[in-house]
Image (cartoon, rainbow, N blue to C red; front, side):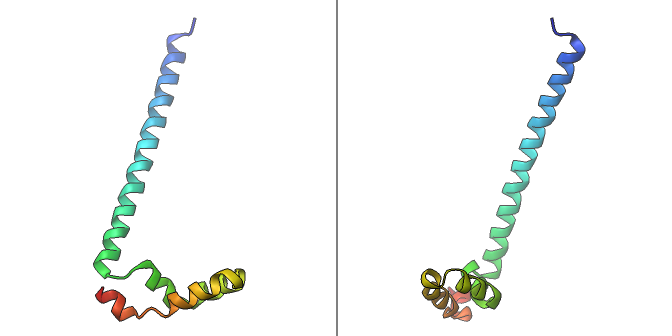
Length: 86
């Protein structure tokens, strides 16, 4: 037979695990929604931000030149003002 103390410890551990999982899920959803609203508020897409960052372009361009050269050039060709207006 399992003692009451062992049952209580197992129950508390399960309760803590469930609360931990739910809080992680809540904070994940909350931060994702906060980031989406921030990007919508600023009117800047992620592609535009990456197009302005030369280090990202250089890192991707050197990593897979054959596959990523043209897409990087297309992303860098975005007009930031036009994208913000969109």
